[in-house]
Length: 394
Ligand code: ADP
Ligand code: MG
Image (cartoon, rainbow, N blue to C red; front, side, top):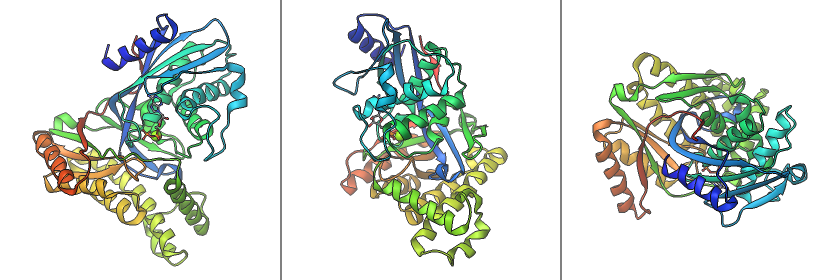
């Protein structure tokens, strides 16, 4: 058992005085490429990271749900029959329960609706996590995935991984009230070791693309700036609105239906800012497909320039980068990384760099030094190995 598994079990014991019926976990994720394309029905290429969120869960004799987290001072308890009164939460509104509890309770609510099983068993749920929160590594999908996997089994709901990813997204959108796409949940639920997930966010077709990192002698570094983002606030919503405006102007249901060749025509039809937002999404969709093609022909060594181009597009066209993220990317590239880009929704969080295994320490040191020189708080820099999705730990 890992330390985080022990922490979840210890919390469960402290909460209930019992041993859990089972322990389940799900990973956070990093996105290799494809940012803000998910809600435009486009393509993304995320992978699950080794850091996981763990749910220790036990049945109760009554119809109540109690959730506790090592991150929260107090457990939250509600009746199973109250869930439909608590949710949905209007987009942008504050949930009727403490926000963190809206993730696991929202999963319970959405899972009950998605399943045909008659769910009448109350549960105690204790959560611990090693996924950094608000770093763009999707601690939210990890808590949703761990809870959904546990409840699916204990409630006998029988949903498959894609259905559980949808449950997680429903919890995040409708219980928490955060308007996010489905990439994070799919990456957490379907991730595989040493592979990325090529996901079509329109059809939800998902293809596992081997990365062969160790064979290529390469590593992926996460450079967490420590500046936390807030998905539910202005910038994210404003970008979504720009994309919807662009799509409407172009007469398509989503920017997925616009190709790079359409961009010159699009430019004349909309204001300059909307055009730059559109151009990011359209070129990023193309870069995801180019990255998958490069991985298949040349392996991970062939994708560095695409990562760099993706970062430039997010910095200049979509304007979701920050000075810290730019510094991490620039310093990593200057120290010899093959490619680097911010990952996740932006406005803070983490960047990733593709580096020779032998250069992990040198690139990490260069990034830390750049942050110190710039007067930024020390970043958290660590290698990540693309890892497997949810499993039962005990
Ligand atoms: P990210 O997914 O990038 O880490 P989000 O803002 O999407 O950031 O999700 C972070 C939120 O998810 C936290 O503020 C908290 O409400 C909830 N959360 C994540 N992990 C946990 C946890 N282990 N315990 C309680 N709440 C958690
Ligand atoms: Mg999140």
